[in-house]
Length: 250
Image (cartoon, rainbow, N blue to C red; front, side, top):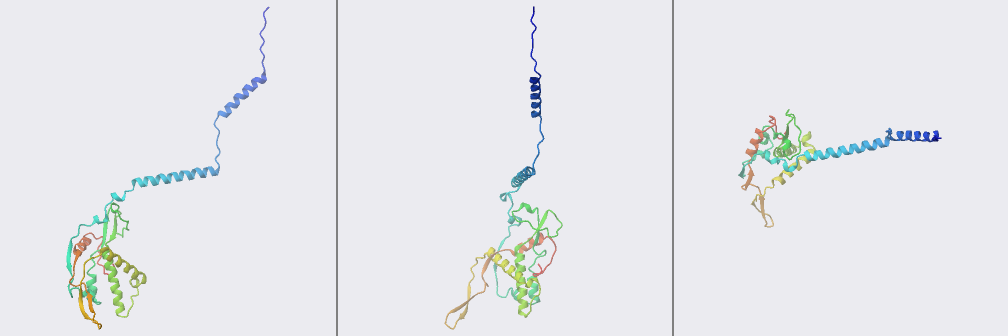
């Protein structure tokens, strides 16, 4: 007589298996994350800082180095040097406070008042300058320092002439601010030129104590100078605009 195999079936154990399977499915399925406002702000700030540093690094890589730029002096040709000897009475017109003196000083200003247009100025190792109304986006306008210095010297002359007439110029040129500015411009120009020419003195008699008096007039001393005519012609040829200004309005 054959025996009948008997298998135990436990619904509880099967339910446990099903329950375990369901839990594994749930745990393995992706869950949506909830970002807090602090986490969002921190990540946005980190991204901004990263972009900022990356932009700065790219700018440093693409920015031309000063060694690759042209010297501002390369804009000019090589001006010749000339020997100059100042002669007694040769430039007396510049010491006059009348119309003759005005004409002499104003004649020093070249057409264009020393303003030159520099094409592609970023090639040069110098600060940017405003276009000054030349209508060319690829050009900037600069002024030759020598003309600015002449303007300041001529302005001081106008003020001295007014004082000699017991008058006062009621405008910007006679203002304390402009006078200080011009004195400093002239100081800078003198230091920059640093003319080392040795000037000699002329005897002017004796004092009551028997001491010799002498005067340095700069007359007869030979100076080695950059050719003013060559500089002036270059400024006229490269002028940014036509402007026959005076010393005081340059």
